[in-house]
Image (tube, rainbow, N blue to C red; front, side):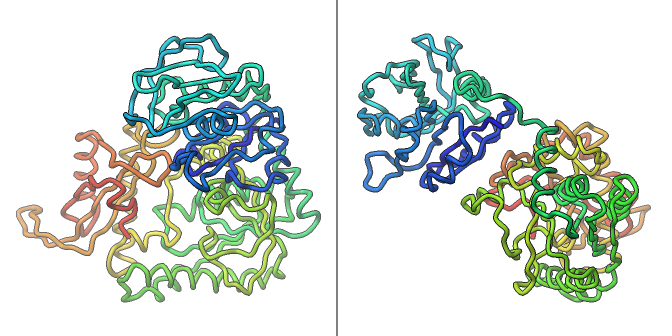
Length: 512
C-alpha cells in the first residue's frame, strides 16, 4: 500500500498532519525526525512531510533533515519549521523575524503551482523565524503581510514548503492542500479505507498467531471491542474474550457488551461477575488514587486467575491505538512487548508475559470507529463515549456504595439520552465527551413543600480534537434545563444539578 512518511520535529500538531493525510485515504506513519533510516524507509514512502517544531534551525544542535530524505528523490513538503529546515539544508537563509506571526493570516498565491491552487488563503501562522534567502532552484509561491515567503517550491525536484499550518482547522482548505501533496504530487493511491484496513489486519493477525489460542480482554470500550472483533474475524474460534463485570460501568453497559460480542458477533465470551468483589474492596475508600490502585489490583488478580484456567494463552489482544504508539516515540513496528500498567487491560503484573496482538496499533480513534462500523458492531458501541479505566469510581466522588453508583448511573443515562435526542451525541457530533459526576456534597432543597438535604450531580461536556486540551461545550440552555429537571425528578437522592464550565487546562476532563 502506498504511504507517506511524516517526520516530527517536535510539533504540537504532528498527529494532526497524520490524521489529515489519512482522511485523504492515504496511509502514513509519524516518526521522530531522528528515527533510524531503515525504520522510515521500510515504509517505502512515496513522499515525506516535515512537521513544524519549537526550535530555530540556526540554533546549535537544532533538529535537521536526515540525509536519506534528500537522497531519496521523493517529493518533500516542509511545514513551518519543516520549511525552514528544508531551506537551511539546501543553502537558503533563515533568520529571526522582526515581526512574529501568530494566528490567522491572509496568504496570496503569486505563482501557479500544483499545491496552492487558490488565489487567496486564510491560514494559521505560528512562527518567529522566516526565510530571508531562498535556496537555489526555489521560487516564491505565496506571501502574507508579514511573510514575503509564505510558501516556496522547487517544482523540478518536487520540494515544497509552507510557512503556515495546513493541518489545523483554522487553515481553510488545509486538508485539500495535504491531499494534493499526497495524491497528486506524490502519486500515492488513496487506498486506505476501512475495507483495506480490515483485510490487511486479518492477514497480519493470521501470520502472527498461526493456530494458537488467543485471549482478548474486553472492557466495553470501542478500542477493545473493535480489536477483539477484528481478531475474531481473523482466527474465529481460536479467540476467547474475557469480560470482567466490575459493577463500575454505565447503565446497561455490561449487558450490552455480553449481548453484542456473544450473540451478535458470535464470539466465545467468558463473563465474570465480580461486582460484589469490587464493592467490598472499595468500601470506605475516598482517595481517588487509592481507588484506582484497588480497581487495578482487583482486575489483575481476576484476569490472572481466568488466564490460568484457560491454560495461559501465549497471545493477548490489546486495543492499543496509534496515539499510544506515537506518544511512546513510535517503537519498532509489530514488536511484541510485556504489558505495561498504563495499558487498557487494567495493568497486568510484570511476571505475566504475553505476546501482544495489536490490530489497531496504527489507527487513529476515528479510523477505529470506521472499522468498527464496517465490522458490523452496533452504533451505540462504536460511538460510545470515552470511559476511564477505573470506571465510575473516579466519577463517584467520595465513598463508593452500590446506592451511590446506581444514582450516578441513572443521572448519567439521562444526560446522555437527552444529548442524543438533541443530536449532540454519536457520529458527527461536536461533543468529544460528556458524563455526569456525583459529588460528595449535600445541599438544601425543597420538594413537595418538604425540605430536602440531598446530593449534587455535576454535568461535564467538552469539545476537543486531541484530548490534550479541551473546552467546555456550550450546550443549549433548553437541553441543560431538560436534563436537570429529569434528574431531580427521576433520580432518588439528588436535588441539585450543576454544569462544569472549566476548560482543560487548568482543569482535567475527568474530575478525579
